Image (cartoon, rainbow, N blue to C red; front, side, top):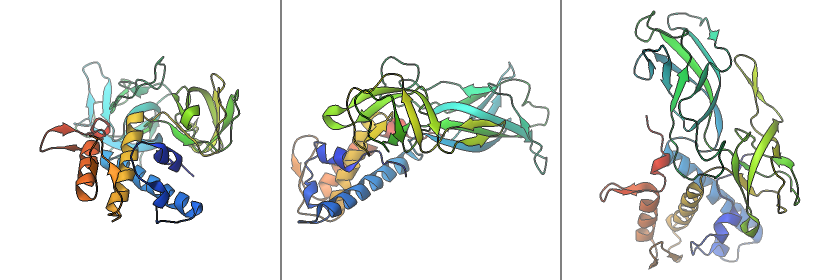
Amino acid sequence: MATPYVTPDIIANAPTGVPWNIIPFPKATSEQQLAEQTNICWRATGRVDSFCNQPLRATLDTEDTYGPDYRLTIGQDGVARALVSRVPIVSVPAVRCSARSSFPRQWQVLPAGAAQPESPPLGVYNTTTFGSAGDINNAILIQPGYIGWGGGRNGYIVELTYLNGWPHAGLLTAPIAGATSFRVDDVTAWTGAAGFIYDGANTEQIKVASVVADNPVTVPGGVSIPVGPGTVTLATATTQPHPVGVVMSAIPPIIQWATIMYCAALVLESGASAVTIQSLPGSRTSGGPGIEAIIKDIEGDPATHKQGILQPFCRVI
């Protein structure tokens, strides 16, 4: 099972002022509190993805596009440029094309390396410093010679299989200090990525050297892509021990903060009018106005042209 962007431990330790010990109701057992707090974490994660109009965690997706036209253009040098739906693009392990008029499709699989992201993501791979900025690169470049104007406008269908998003997982085993490999619930796009193990005072930055998936996916061309549960091997050993369930993520920390704020808003929206939380500006607030202020911080306010935390990470087509 995958891991939400935040966990009960993360939201309980965040400076929101929410009295999590009375959620879902006063005198609830620790098991009841954990269950509902986990549900809130998942609801907030879904709300983040819904607002951004895409999952932000790393996924492997296959998408069809038609061209040449607006979303699939051909440059004067013959290089094709395809716009895709999910960002940021990490890598393009498979591309195949066919004449649009061919039924069934007569696919031509492009060789490895014939396609690549136009702008590889910054701050996660091949970097000395972990980055937190929105990185919306939604174009794939395709080698000349496979797609052209010979079939006219929209004469080709191109199937693009690409990794996108930020690596995100939960620990399935508890690494000790000095560990270099351990199991996580999702190895997607972790190879070569930098991120954090979020464990309170034991939080530390890590870089993944390689991964092995329990059940890798084979894409056109026979390439095996590691996705889902598996084992990660770090470039450098951990410096702290970490328990099972802790988040390991390359998702920008500001997205984690937005998810925490959504969690707080969900508590207020639940009708718990007696719950009072500390608003971000410093004033105490309860009920509707508090929810509105939190949501505007996350999503922005068109009336005042205020940019929300999540807007730089939204899918733009």
